[in-house]
Length: 144
Image (tube, rainbow, N blue to C red; front, side, top):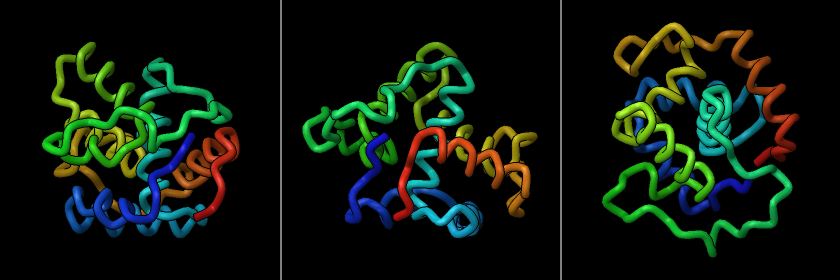
């Protein structure tokens, strides 16, 4: 999976409430990744858990050459194309706005029992750290 370049890191994280940002930073620290990469892994894991196909990690797709979501798409515009496509597919199948799919995916990492950021308990859970580490290794994502 190709991760966003350094210019999008702060922008991607800024789309989330402060307490969610803090939790994402804590998880990122636990798994030795940047917060934006952690967000992207969380989204990818959520989508794959829902049987949404994403490009394999070893695909030579250059995210710079891939179509991007229009700037008015909010957080989607800052995600790699395979994630954008997966989010759009999930959103279409479930009848949700794409932004809500992103919120559900991040919430799924932080608190699997919550359905949105308001319900989300934001403590770092060891089980979730382990799951993220395992998924990271399976996807061969390098530390940022």
